[in-house]
Every structure is written in C-alpha cells, then in structure tokens.
Image (cartoon, rainbow, N blue to C red):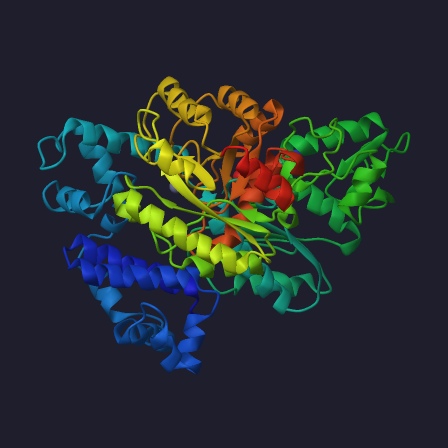
Amino acid sequence: MASNAELARIFGEIADVLDLTGANAFRVNAHRKVARLLEESGEDLAGLARTDPARLRELPGVGEGSASKIEEFVRTGRIKEHDDLLATVPAGVPALLGIPGLGPKRVRTLWQEGGVDGVGTLRARLADGSLTGLPGMGPKTLKAIAESLAFLDTTRGRIRLGEAMPIAEAMIAHLRSAGGVKRISHAGSLRRGKETIGDVDIVASAADAARLHAALQSAPGVAKVIASGDTKTSVRTHHGVQVDLRTVDDAQFGAALLYFTGSKEHNVRLRERAQRMGMRLNEYGLFREEPGAEGTPQSRGAVPVAARTEEEVYAVLGLWFVPPELREDHGELDAHPPGDLVDLDSIKAELHCHTTASDGTLEIAGMVEEALRRGFHTIAITDHSRSQAQANGLSIERLREHAARIREVAAHYAKRIAVLAGSEVDILADGTLDYPDDVLAGLDWVVASPHSALRAEPAAATERLMAAVLHPLVHVIGHPTGRIVNAREGLSPDITALAKEAAARKVALEVNANSMRLDLRDAHVRLCVQAGCAVSVNTDAHGAGDFDELRYGVATARRGWLGTGLCINAWTQARLLAFARAKR
Ligand code: DGT
Ligand code: CA
Ligand code: CA
Ligand code: ZN
C-alpha cells in the first residue's frame, strides 16, 4: 500500500540526491514541494492517482512529471528515477544531510573530496584530522559538525513524538480492521506524550487475540517480526520503529493499560501505595492481600479489587485519575488535581502563524478560515521579520502593507473571529529586535523569537532573551530555546529567571507545538507554572495541516502541568484581547 508518508519520503530522497549531485535548483525544489504536499495533504494522493488522475495533476506543485511518478509507484511499488538516483551516491551519503549544519554543498565536498561515504567515515575522519583543509571546512565548521554528531549520539534510537503518533494510529486502525477488538489503546511514553519515543506500545483486548497478533505481523509497513507469542508480538517497521502489542483479558484491560503506560517510576509509587493499603498492584489488577497467601500468583485465582479500568484502580487507591502525561513521579500522586489542566478543546486561539507573505503556504484568509474550522476565537498572523531572508522575511515597507491587508481581512471576519496583525520578529544575537519600536507599536501582536546564533553560552542566552522579555511591545517569546528535537540542542537560558520576569511584565513564553520543536519543553513549562508565568501554546502553522500539531504542544503543556488559567490561548477572547492591548 502506498501511503502519502512513504511517497513523501521518496520524493524527499529524490530531491536530496538531485541536490547532492548538483542538479538545478528548480528540479530539486519541484520534488521538495511535492514531498511537502504529500506530508501535509489530508487526502490519499496515491488513491487519487487511481481514481482521478486529472485532479492529481491540478494540485498545487504537482505537474505531469510528479503525477506520473506517483502513478508509477502505485502501479509498480517503486519509482525508477528514485532507484537510479540512489545508485549514483554511496548508500550512507544522503543520511549525512540529516546532520545539523550539513547542507548539500558541504556533503558533496565531504563525499567527493574527503572520501566520506557515511556517518562512520565522517566520524573517523573528523577524529584523524584528515578533513582539515577541504574547501569550506574551516576548524569552526569541523568543530560544529563534531558537536552535532555528538548530540545525535545522545538521541540514538528515539524518534520524535510527531513521527511515532501517526505510525501508532495507522497500526491501531489496521488492528481494529482485523475485527473482534474490544478495547485498544496506545500506551508507554507515546501515551504519556513524551517528546521522543523509544518504541510504540499497544495494549488490546479482543475476542480472538491470535488474530490481532497475526494482523500486526502482516501489517503494512512491517519490515521484520522481532518476537511473537500468544500475548505479545513485537515488530519493526520500515521506519525502524519497534511496535509492541500486548493482548490481555478484557476484564484486566485497565490494569494492563496502566502498567504499560508507565512510567516505570509512577508505577513503582502506585505499587508502594497499594502495599501500604494491604493490596498488591500488577499488570493483571489490584488485589487484596490474603493473610498467609503470600507467593501465590496474583494473576490467577485471586479476585481483583479493580482491573477493568484505570479509573477504578486509581479510585480504589484513593487517588485522583492521573492523566497519562503526568505519570512521571513528579509529585502527581500527592498533588491537588489541577482540574483545569489544558486540553485540546480548551485552546481557542492561534497566536503564531505564517502566510504566503513570508514562508507559509496559505493567504491570510486561508489561515483565518482554518482557525475558524478549529473553533478558535482569535488568530494572530505573525510572518517573519526582515533578517529572515531565507524565509522571505518582510521589509518594513512590506510589513506595513501586510498589516493593512490583515486589517482588511480582520474587518471582514470581525463578527466571527478576532484577527490580529502581528509579526514574528527576530531577537537578534545582541538581544535587540529586528524592527524598530515605532514599527512594532503599529502592530496588534508581537511574537519575538530567536532564529540565529543558537550556540550561545547560557548566560549570554539568558541576557539576550531577557532583553526581549523586558521589551515593552513584546507579547510572546516564541520557541525560546530554538532547539530542534533530536537534531539541535539550541539555547540553554535560565528559564526560571526568564519566567519570573515574564510573569512580572505580563509576557507569555511559548510552547511551540510543532513536534520538531516542542519548545519550551515539558520541564520548562513546569518552571513557568511554578513562577506563575503565562504560557502560549501555538502551532507556528505554515499551512492548514500544521494546525494538527497542536496536540503535541498540548501534551507538552500538560506534562508541564499547565492549567487554563496561565494558558493565554485558553482565555476568553475579551481577556486575551485585553492582554494584547495592554502592550500598546
Ligand atoms: P520508551 O519506549 O523508552 O519511550 O519508554 P516507555 O515508558 O514506553 O517504556 P517501555 O516501552 O520500555 O515500557 C512501557 C511501559 O511498560 C513502561 O512505561 C512501564 C512498563 N514496563 C515495561 N517494562 C517494565 C519493567 O520491567 N518494570 C516495570 N515496573 N514496568 C515496566
Ligand atoms: Ca515504549
Ligand atoms: Ca515497549
Ligand atoms: Zn520562528
């Protein structure tokens, strides 16, 4: 089965290899555009190739060439140009593009002039110094590459939440389609919403468990069966992701889900508590200890006190229902339940997004329509500022025209949604902003974000971001650390100091919901909450599909115990607009 994701990967690889072999930029970009469309489209484009090839060709960026490649893939399961291109470079070379700091030009130099054919030789040659003196490879560049490699080592084997979730959902849908499923859920770190996932855990109960295990082994995208048994199957997908399925008796589904959701540390606390109460908790249920019955297998014979649902188990233990995102042994058992914990439904505003004016794919009205579809009451349009040349950042003059257009659109939609004319203004390396104050004062909404100089020392980073917090015209500090999950460490400012000042100045720190960013991260959100600092959860959308990433930002915010009171996106429109105006 051809999926959009699989096709996107192939078009992305075609673009990469074209880029590496010095093909013209137009051809490279054409393939990248199609890859992006495939990633973002909610429509099954391989299906479209079968049912309506004419419409496939009308999609933005899909010409005859790309359309016939998609058709070729649907017909034959491969694209000849893709295979031919891959044959022109050593197998390990395209992967070098995934190393932060290495673009096509540098990779080409490393490969053709430095004899580097993959990450292994790159590592060896960095170590033996033999890359010194290659064109464009000064000591600073080589040091940066070595640092990127060292950082990648720390992430080995874990994939981003935003990659794992769609894989898990597709797998669960496939298992459901096998029939007879009573209950099924993802579990583990994925259900807890962690930013990276070691493996995907699925717990299910079914009329015929064997059928489910068979279905997992033959699921689309499965490359290898690692282990198979009556109650547990593990497979590895083509993406290299391990998926574990456990099937349990439906009467014990809740206890199993609780156990396999973890975290291990949270479960230890639960078991200790159970013990103190004269009970025993395991993956089969919560059992009352019978005097003298020590050592009997708790799974058999004994009648569980609670096992059917997680809710029952927590209730019998005298606890509130701890949401999965909080199950990290960070004090959640003793906490007063924050009843107003943010959730997807509580988010009613998108306060950081882009349009075609900079590097987005939709016009202003398109973004507003999308926000309306999501049930939002407010959207701030915040395109890039002038320093972001590669993202088509706006000159002062273009910004003024853009703001005027946003206000026309705002007037048109005034009865249905508030549309704010804003900017995502760069926080430059010295802490100053990329537009003068009089320009910013003319906008309704200002997100200030660091995009460059992301290797600064912690003290310098704090000072730089603090300058933006102290700036009287700034509403939100966007993706404050600039990290990219699994790829770039970013800044390490003193979040507590920033949050304290931000709380005093009524500035919000962002949780950028894009699963590549999740910045601030969960632990930082917790520090904000402790400092009483407002937090803004935004998708930073560059197109309609990006709004779907909101759930990852919400999961991160929940992991940081963010309540709706401190989340400006969850406020009423009146309260949010008053917050916006207070800075003008
Ligand atoms: P990951 O996959 O590394 O992102 O993290 P988890 O939390 O998903 O860990 P994983 O997949 O090893 O196991 C899933 C859950 O199952 C884990 O959170 C708790 C439970 N679990 C697994 N193995 C053990 C174990 O040996 N002892 C205990 N107490 N719990 C376990
Ligand atoms: Ca796991
Ligand atoms: Ca696992
Ligand atoms: Zn940004």
